[in-house]
Length: 213
Image (cartoon, rainbow, N blue to C red; front, side):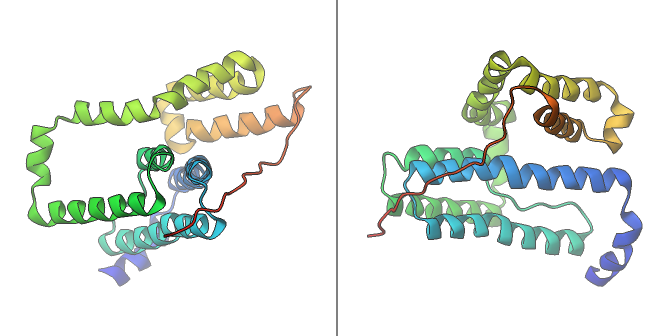
């Protein structure tokens, strides 16, 4: 099955698949990475610990995604939890690094046992999807409110990409081949290039040293 899917893979490539894959890669390697770096900065993690964290997220996640997707012939992705990374940043301000790592290990063991036991389906019935999505939305809500605030502060630079995204979202056929988020990214790049009184600066994030006891 693995060899067969690899041989058939080039035949499945299309403009829509490539553009959606590119957007997924761009989103996964840009926005969530900043969340991880922000969490690491809040917890005063060292550069080596932060690098190991990033490698575990993107290196191992990408490798597992590639292997499993080619084996089963389905888009099965392995990714870290963005809300979880946000909670790590706030947790490191109240708990030690070792305590947070311990919580991660216990959580991983519980998830593994739940997957083996087959109790996930029963738990999904006990915990309705709207409740779980509400919890996730609560964690991500500040990002949505900050987006609106950024449009108010700079309507042209931040409003034009948002408007492009909304307009492209209405054309369903076109958006399947050309994702709206990609149009918003292109619009943002053009705004940075041509709008007056806009300067591009490098992003510098300073990592603290967090001792491991």
